[in-house]
Amino acid sequence: MHARAVAATTTALLGAVALLLPASGALAHEVGDRRPGEFARPGVIAHRGASAYAPENTLAAVDGAARMGIAWVENDVQRTKDGTLVVIHDDTLRRTTDAEEVFPGRAPWKVRDFTAADIARLDAGSWFGPAYAGARVPTLEQYMRRVEHNHQKLLLEIKNPELYPGIERETLKLLGNEGWLDRRHVEGRLVVQSFSADSIGTVHALKPAVTTAFLGAPAPARLPAYAAFTDRINPSYASVSRDYVAAVHALTGPHGRPLEVFTWTVDDAPTALRASGDGVDGVITNRPDVVRGALRGW
Ligand code: G3P
Ligand code: CA
Image (cartoon, rainbow, N blue to C red; front, top):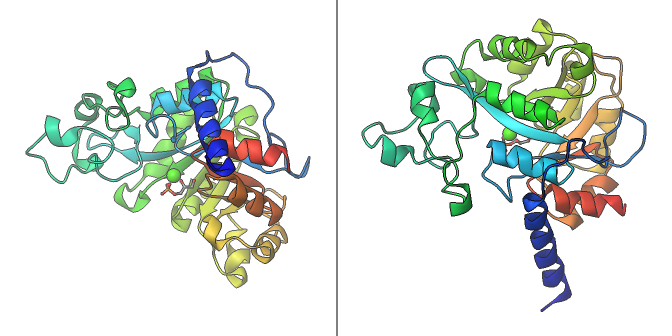
């Protein structure tokens, strides 16, 4: 076998083994687990949890990241018909649950057309593999409790906010109820992001202490406007260059710190190293073990 293929296979096996190890109470020190400016290596965030190894956005994917010693997880938050916040990426239930089988007459299976009780009946794990049969779409409340239990940190994405008027206030209310808006959490364990600048602006206006991130790559000339309400610019890795990262870093965000750049979704070592060389502050990845391994040697 080619040496690179062997390395890839070995990495995948190590990842799978890591998921089977018992979770430890305290997470090991991880690359990038630091306050801004403490050291240069990028942070690693498990995208939708350790989603290359467990069904995305489930508690199993959160636990998988914890077992790998990855503190930061990313998720996607939307809202049910009866107002419950749930963790799921697509605006329909089709791809990641068995909604078509359980509710055959309810096409197109939009998240917002189903109650929390409906969604609680769905299997959100079998599509990924039989070992995960019975995994559920977590409510945000369930999700926050698992992240807290695991001593993890959360990059929370408000997904499709245009479909859910008021979701920013509701998300912040739930975070507050769960104890995630105290100083300890907002200063080091929570970031709220969105592709919608309006949504991020709303979060900042409602709770100025919360660290926020805009998903996208605004033109450099437009970045100063973003710096009024967001602490990070999180672009696709295809949009990242050394010059772009420098343009972002040159600005000061709403908390008096230089703006940061966390790029997505990077799943291989060469791309992680390239992004790191471009100066990003963090890498959002489905394969946190692969990216951490690459960046440790950086
Ligand atoms: O965190 C970045 C990433 O989640 C943005 O894209 O579509 O995976 O939510 P998406
Ligand atoms: Ca996301």
